[in-house]
Image 1 (spheres, rainbow, N blue to C red):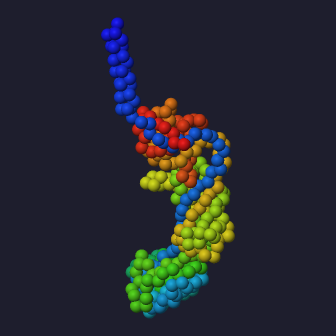
Image 2: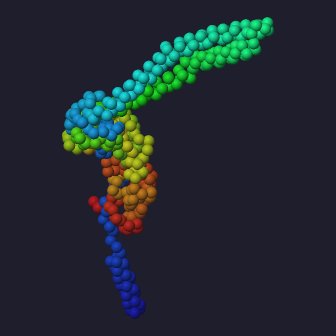
Image 3: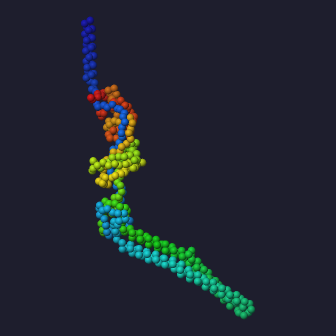
Length: 398
C-alpha cells in the first residue's frame, strides 16, 4: 500500500514537471497594438502636389535661313502681339521682290496687249482677207466668162484661180489669228497663265521677305533669348522663348484610386511651396481620360479664378481637393495594409488571440488612410504592429 502511494506521488510529480516544462517552453504572446474596425461617415479630400502651368510657352524661330541684323528685345521684356522681335538681313530678298514685280508687270502688259492691240489687229486682217476673197472670186468668175467667149487664154483663168486660193488661205489664217487672240483663244490663255505665274512668284518673294521680320504671335513676356546680331538663323533653331499672357492654371498628378472622388467643377485650396501661408482657390477644369501606366496617376488641370500676383510659371504647389462625404465606410492607416500596391493586399487580424492574415479589397486612399471595401468588418480587431506571422499568439498592449 505504501509502495502504491509512492508511485502515485511520483506520477503526479512527473505530470507537474511536464506541465511546468511545457509552459516554460511555450512562446510567449507577442505584444501588439490593436484597433477595433468601425464604420463612420468620412469627409473625403485629395491632397496632391503639382505646378503652375503658364497659359502658353512658345519658342520663337525663323522659317528661313538668314543672318540676324537686329534683336529688339531682351529677357523679361513685355511684348505686344505683332511686335517686331528679330530682324534678318533683307537686301537679297528685296531684290528678288523687285525682280518678281517687274516680271508680273510684263505679264500684265502682255495680257493688255493681246486684249487691246493683237485682237483688233487680227480682226482688221480678217476683214481685209474677206475683201480680198470677194475680189478674187469676182475675178475668177469674170475670167471664166471671158475664156468661154474666146477673149482670153486658159492661163489667165488658171492665174485667177490661184489668186482665189491664196486669198482664201489668207482669210483662214486671219480667222485663226482672231480665234487665238480672243478671250478664249490660246494666245490669250497663255498670256493669262504667264500673268498668274508671275503674280504667284511675286507673292512668294514678298512672303519670303516678310519672313525676315520675326514678330510676337501674342502679347507676353520674353523668358529667354539665345540669339544675337550676326548669328545665322535657321529653321527649327530656337531664337527665344515667350510666356504668353493669360490666366495661369495648375497641373497635378493624382493617384488613380482617387478618381471616384474627383469631378470637374470641384473646388480646391492651393498653396505655393514658396508662399505656404498664402492659400488660394482653384477649380478642377479638366480630368484626363487616360492613366499614366508607369506611375498609376491621372492628370488634373485646375483654373484659378483669382490668381495671386506672386504665382510664376513652373512654381510647385500643393492642392487639397474637397471630395464627397462617404457614408458608413471603414478606413484604416495605410501602413498596416501589407502589399498595398500589389494585386493581393492583406491585413493582420487578432482572432481569438492569434494572428491571422485577411485578404482585403481596397478603395479610396487619402491622407495616409485607405478604405477597406472587403475582407474586414466592423468590430474586427486589426493589428497595427507590422511583421506579425500568421498563427503567432498575440497580447494587446494597453
